[in-house]
Image (cartoon, rainbow, N blue to C red; front, side, top):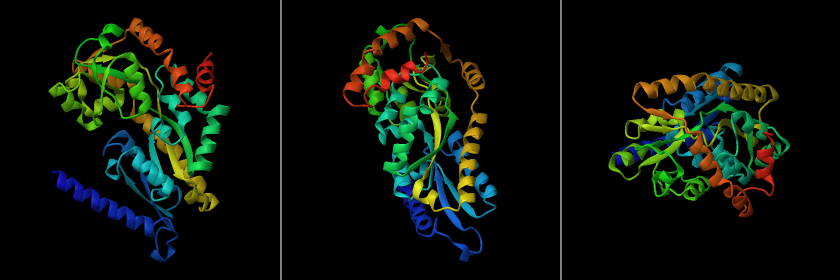
Amino acid sequence: MRTTQSFLRIVVMGLITAVFLLGFTPTKAMGKAEYRIIAATNGAIGSEEHQAVKEFGKRLEELSKGRIKVDAFGIELGDAMSQIERLMDGAQQIYFGELTWLANVHKDLNISAMAFTFKNVEHLIQFLQSDRGNKIWNELLEKNGIRVLDFSGRRLPRVVMSKRLLKSIDDFQGLKMRVPEIPIYLRVWKHIGTSTHRVTWGEIYLALATGLVEAHEGPIDGIWAIRTHEKAPYMLRTDHIYSLYFVAVNDKFFRNLPKDLQEAVITAAKDSTRFINTLIHEEKILAKYKAEKTNVIYNEKLREQLLDKLSTLGPQLEAEGFWSKGLYEYAIKLAK
């Protein structure tokens, strides 16, 4: 099985190389598209992210009247950081993904992964549209060649899924919990007191089944796709992180396009985030969970305990240089 997957990955990467070498330079001689580009996400095939990338490609081909041909891919092109690195190199022209991953490129976006910093998604958007937010976008453009076209695709909040009922912060002490390999996520859950385990997203179900982990966290919509509620039937609505989907383009490629095609790329990006927002409905997804006997729990007292426990971590991480000085207080005060 692994040999087959490796072979397929080699074939796909070979095709990508061919597209890159022949692709986003003008190809009028071919008699069809003038440009051929790669647009991708790290979402699974058929996921909302993958559907949104395909929608981007469809819209861009329509808006450009066929002058741009888009090859749309999902996780077969690799994980988020592999694709973001390819975006910066210019081997991939478009990336559609979750905001948190850009923190690996610009440290100030680590603030978006600091649990309980943002009260809701509107608070996060307010920050990203503020002077400090615009500074981040400008620096990504100037230093990394990443032009963020839109960041209005909404993810559902991150929650905790557990094999047993968690009633207080004491129940988190020593809890075997899967946490993404993102430094600030690991720091948050270690600070709370859990025993963090690094397991890939696609292997969480098995890790819960075998007892390697007892709980994990993640976005409500993403968790449904991997069905871990079958092994961890307690959903604790911590809503500790709100996030967004963004669409980014390689700036060199973008600047080399004619003005009308630049406008087409921007419009297609905005249309793709609007599209994904039509796919994700919290009430409908929660109804599906409840129909399959998932216990959806709102415990405000526990949320307050977690928030209080983490109140010292934000300033500590800022002192360690996880983000620029004063950014934590700036973000929190925006909501007041």
